[in-house]
Image (cartoon, rainbow, N blue to C red; front, top):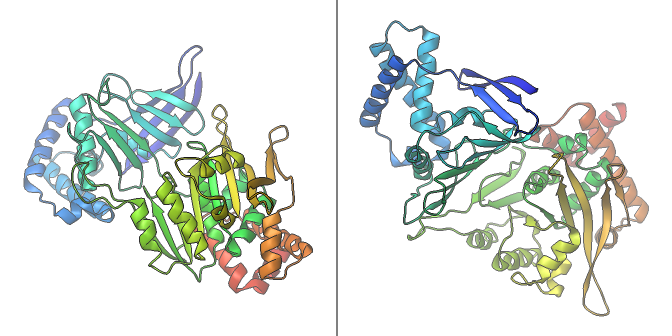
Length: 489
């Protein structure tokens, strides 16, 4: 049974995708990629060899991800020239396609490049040369494909090429590689004997269009009221930790709520791989962990970047993911010293997040946890693929026994698929009444007016990072003008 049919375009070459599912079989993703004829392929191989010998790249061109587009254009122009010299009778369209094929082989990942251009594909898995490539489709889940990498050596070549771009090598001595493609896609590669069945490459794709809060509201991942509550918390510099399982949408939600930050503040983000994208109007300094070769110097750890960020006079600090006790300690120390901090952590619920923070190896003291105001936990249903904000909770220190309890403010109810308010927020009321003299009614009114702005953005289909960021900035800088527009909408 055919489930879907569509066309994707990779660097000017169209490829047709057909997704099918027969009873008792796995879902199949079949892609028809135009291929050169055998005689033409032989010419192309000769051209590729000539280019490898004649084109010299500087170390900066190899290592600078931002220069990859320029390098690809350089190779494409040269490939097109050589093709026209050796196969002059081709049409311009065909010679351009063949030049693109050469560039994809020399600087890219061959046929895998087409999968990278499919916005519906989340994950690409090369498990060995002996089985087809697998992928995770946003709508149809795990699929086998009709693509294979011909040899284990070719998989190793692709891994080595990726490694060279980040100044690393993959070898028998150092058989694991974590890196990023020029597109921002995250890559993990392993080689035998670490991976028993063969060499592997796993690519987690970076969203070409980052999710925004309006996207999440439209998909029912979060309610308007819960989003407005988080907006109020972000505006008044309360600290937020986002938890959840693998691929539950933690980083995407973190990215979305960071658009609520005022633009007149300095923001530092620290990540293992680049995933955060903030509005262009913000003063934002993104920083990445650097992993050198396993047996060489050159590592710059997340802990080092977190410590260094405190010397950069940030107003807000965003941390991609907290994994170690030292990182958590610096994170909570930053909260104590007056910085607004936002981060993600692996934990399924608010209560599980509390246990993980308090238990070894992290073991944050109870007294330090007062600085963490809210925890948002994400949920993903692996069968249906839906993602939901499962809970928004807060940690409340006890004045009597020194323990910390959790209070769930918003909760997802699966029976009617709604995110509803369960309990009043103690931390929100305490903070805003203390520092702004806002009453409970003032807080309610503030949330309601933010709901109206979120509805205005949805109605006007504002769902890009800069569109959302522009409206948030207007809310802070041109409040009266914005609310007039919202009132007329």
